[in-house]
Image: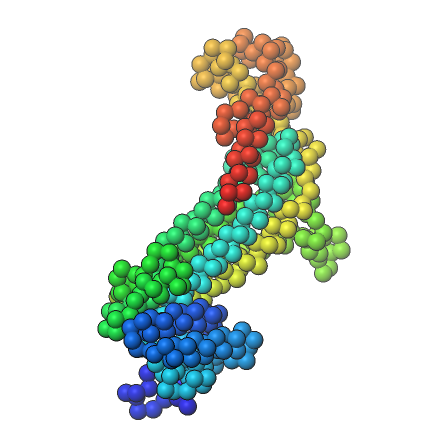
Length: 462
Ligand code: ARG
C-alpha cells in the first residue's frame, strides 16, 4: 500500500535515496500524541462544518482513541516509508477505520499547519517541565544559602580577591539568574499560545472550518493564528525557545565552573558528595566533579542548537519550505539535554558540603578590606580620590612587608597618612565590612536575609 499523502500526480514511488533523506519519523515520532490530539480537534470542526456526520465523528474519535492507545503501548509505530509522523498516523487511522472514513480527516488541513501547531504544543509542555526543574535547582540553592546564612567568602572580580561577601549572597546571585530564565520560559509560553491549525498549507481553508475552536480545544489561550502564512512559516518561537535553553545552559555553566574551581585542593571551598562525583579508572585517589564538567560541556551543545537553527531560518522565503523540517532535532535535543542535566545538577548542589573555615580564612585575604579603609576615610571627611590613594599606599606597605592590612602598626598607619588613626581598625574585619553593606541588594546579613525572603516568596508564588 502506498502510504504517501501525495502520490496522485506521480508516476512511481520515490527513489530509495530520497525516502531516506526525507524521512523524519525517527525524530518526529515524539509528536505523535500531539498529532492525535490535533486530529480529534480537527474532526470536531469538520463535523461542525457539516463535513462529517455525527456518526462519522463518533467513529473517527473512537478510531483516534484506538490509534492513540496503540501508539502508547508501541503496537503501532512509524517506518521510514511513512516519511513523517503525520503520514504514519494517517496510515494508522486508515488501517483502523478503512479508506472511506479514514480518508476524510485530511480535508482542510496540511502537514504545514499541523506540524507548526504540534511543535508548539510539544515545546510548551517541555517549557513547563524545564521550568519545574529550574525551580527545583533554585530550591536547592536557596537551601544552601539558608543553611549557611553567616559564612563569609572572598568575593571576586577578574577572579581576584575583591571584597568579602556572604556565601549565601553569592549563591542567591545564581538563583536570581535562574529566576529570569524561568520567567523567560513563562513569557515565551505566553507568546507561543497561538494555534496555526486552520492555516492549511499557507492560505487557510475553503471548507468553513473554525480555527478558534481547534485552538481552544488544544489549549492555545490566545486563539488561532491571525495570518495563515505566518502561522505555517514562522519559527521564531523555536529560535526563542532554543535561546532560552541555551541561556539556561550558560547559567548552569557559570555555576559549574565555580564548583569545579571551589572543589580543587587549592581552593578547597566545597566537597562534593560521593553520589554526585566520579572516580578515575587509573588514579585511585581521584574524585571528579563530572556533573559540573558535563554541564559546562553541554552548554556548548545548547548554544550549537541555537546557532544551527538560526542559520537554517536565515533568508528563508515565505511560506513553508522543507528546510523547516530541520527545526525539530536541535530543540528536541535541547529539551532532552536539560531534562537529564538539571536533576543531576540539582542533586550535586543540594548535597555538596561547604568548608566554612577555608572560606572565612580567605575572606579578608588579598587586601579585600582596602575599600573599607578608603570608605572609612571618606566618613572622616577625606575626599574619595585621596582616600583611594591612601588605602592603596597601605596595600603597598603590606605587600613590601609581607603582611595583611590588619597587621599594620599604628605607627605605620600614621606614617602613611595622618588621617589613619587607630580607629581605622574598626573596619578591618570581615564581619564589619559585611554588616556595613546593608542597603537593598547589599551583602550585609540583614540585606541577604531580606533577599532570601523575597526569593522564597517568589518561588512559592509560582
Ligand atoms: N515533516 C515536515 C516538517 O517537519 C512537515 C511536512 C511538510 N511537508 C511538505 N511537503 N509540505 O516540517
